[in-house]
Amino acid sequence: MKPKNKIIIVDDHLLFSQSLQLLINSFKDFEVINRFENGKVFISYLQENIDADVDLILLDVNMPVLDGVSTMKWIKENRPELKVIALSVNDDEEIIIKMLTNGAKGYLLKDTSPEIFKDGMISVIEKGFYFTELVSGMLVKKANNESTKINLKDKEIIFIKHACTEKTYKEIASEMCLSPKTIDGYRECLFDKLEIKTRIGLVLYAIKNKIVLV
Image (cartoon, rainbow, N blue to C red; front, side):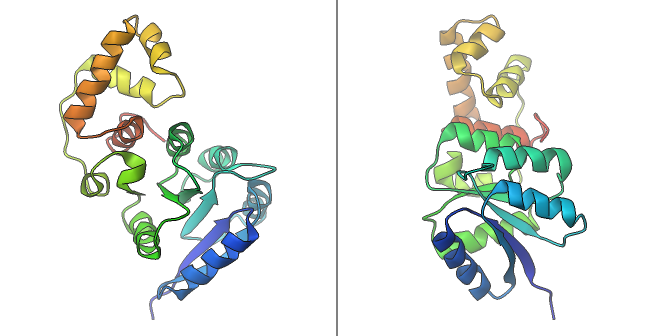
């Protein structure tokens, strides 16, 4: 018999966490092996269980004590092999980019349908990533399949690298010694060329094509 995929939930909302556990355990090849209420207790568990056998972590972005972004930074530095899907009640662009650039393999909204939730978990475990169109601003098919290599100019690559940081577009313009209007032109040109609609899609493209390493 094929072993079940082992899932850990890190979320401070007890009712949501318990309901999510029931949902996941209802899926044929999945089981929740542990739940934690914040990043601090989860990190303590990982430190005490170095060889913990886990296939996927579902990590809430907004938690007390130690939030999802801080927890993700620790995972990136100490356990980068762990696969994580970030969970949130909203699609805040800044938070999503922080989670992605710190190694999250997917980002799902908490009101996602059970079918999409299951597809997302399977995709991250088997392919290594999953993003919905709402979150990525990319065509779903394009986001969740191998990217076609597109020729980019040196300045465009530099811009993309800056876009993967917490800098504003105005700060990027200053860094590249260009006018904000020129930067807006780079952005719109890349959105068109890469068939994306948001900065999140740009970050996702950069990660998948190893323009930035996470």
